[in-house]
Length: 239
Image 1: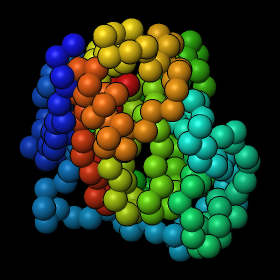
Image 2: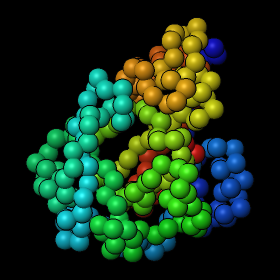
Image 3: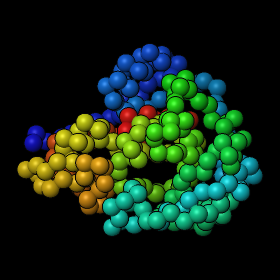
């Protein structure tokens, strides 16, 4: 196949992008995008570790250990139930090979909902209420240490999602669904597929290893979108 390329994730200023334009430019063509507030706009109330410890420590969360040989769960092992407070204590001890997912904000940290602005683009999200889809904990809190990362993975049921960064910085590397199906989930001259048609990785896929990405992703003709979120930024991923 023709060689793929690196591409910069587009960045849109929220105050300059209407809902109609967001749907036309990103949702309908299935394009990822970073959404950023205009410079100088009023900042959302601060959410940091101390605030989370004070307001949400008893909330239930699931801790995953990084497993570089894993082909499931984004390169992590099996989840272990914990509380946010216990995980924040672990964070203070350092390390990068763990992550915590799925604190259900509506049940276990209602105060968080008042601190994270819901962009107009996502106000009509009906996924959590659709009985035909897998149950979700949305909106949920994800917490991890600086330097942590996950393998390139397909989210449950190929659902689109958005994420807002509350602290630190977060870099994304994205292959769109159309290219994923055509380039990574089918055999090609570059080799056997990296994923099954259902989205399961058939071998570990570390998109943050530049050599691996050049060889196994770009080498199969995929475009790899790259971008970094700062505090307050959101990202929309069509799957």
